[in-house]
Amino acid sequence: MPWPYRLQCFDCHAQYPAQTTNYRCERCGGLLEVTFRISRRKVPWTNRGLSVWRYRELLPVDNDRFITTLVEGGTGLHHCPRLGRELGLKRLYVKNEGENPTGSFKDRGMTVALSKARELGKRKVVCASTGNTAASLAAYSARAGLKCVVIVPEGKVAAGKMLQVMIHGARIFQVRGDFDEAMRAVVTLAEHRKGFYLMNSLNPFRLEGQKTLAYEVCDQLDGEVPESLVLPVGNGGNISAIWKGFGEFQTLGITKTRPRVIGVQAEGAAPIVKAVKRKRDRIEPVTSPRTIASAIRIGSPVNWTKVLHAINESHGTAETVSDKEILEAQRDLASKEGIFVEPASAASIAGLRKSREAGKIDRSDLVVCVATGHGLKDPSVVDYLPKHEGYTLKITQPDWIERLERTI
Ligand code: F0G
Image (cartoon, rainbow, N blue to C red; front, side):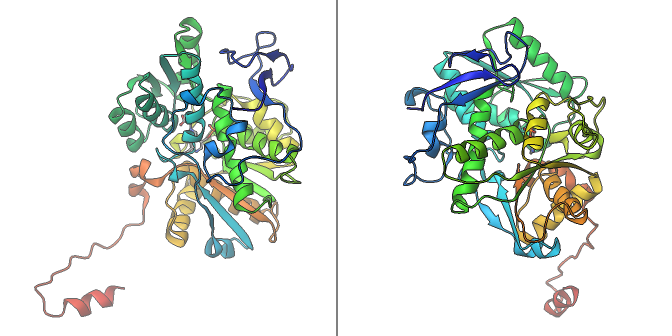
């Protein structure tokens, strides 16, 4: 059973009952969030294995009967000494969310939101997506036997993600335009047809699953809290959820501090970074966002109020990175630490490098970078790898072993 919770407007703090299915405040149109009644206490989960559902009491699904899981969370927090040395950092860790069932952090949120959807009696779920949300929703809907509709920007989703959506049997609709248009379409659909339950990060129940990343990081560091947490920002759900998670652990008395959160966006899709750098309290949407990191090719992030709050409250910052920097960071992490992530995820490493160079992160800081999705999802980056000389092995030649050695 979860601890008592309710829904609350992020802006005007209007309260709503726990079973509310709206995702916007009826009074002011603000974003909703789940708020748990928590205080310092001894927690019941210390002997449970690391996973999203380890933190059952802080997940807003009332009845265990509805839980739909593929065993998500419990991803590795990998110490990266080689890359850390290169970046001049004593303690660099990468939280590899590609280890989740469908290869991205979305599964953390989806197990909770899909379970909640079932508890609320929903039969049809819908999302707009740059790929990973759709892949995750398709898998969890298949697991639960729900109908799944995904709306994606035509021709702008990585091949691996499209394959996932198709193999899990979701209904795919493609819109001419970018993600922001797909997002507008699903919101309109969900507003006009109550039977379709919206599963984007506007859905506050999804963010409740995603906040468990923060809990896990604290537990994996034996109660220590990173000084800085760096992660890519698209729609802004993840950074907001993780910030909430760190806050809850502090309220419970498990940890004493919270990290600075550093949001990274691609140069061609950086409305949040622009607002942070200009010290604005609202964003200006970017039309026709552009970047190789298709997962974060978003010009009008729906969770922007929550993101600006998280960055400001944490005394964090935001950074843009170029596509070239993203691709270099992707290769660095793969070739120096053995962790293969998709371009959007590599943006966090590229952003970390830039923040270090700008002196925004101290050498002695404990830094955690969130690698949000697996590299195999987007095979198109092969086109950007440095051209290797193709070596053909002619094993009919008697000296083939010597020839092989000479090339190394
Ligand atoms: N990294 C990856 C790999 C993503 O797929 C996304 C978002 C993000 C980072 C950004 O997270 O939106 O919570 O700020 N992907 C969404 C999708 C938009 O549809 O899959 P965010």
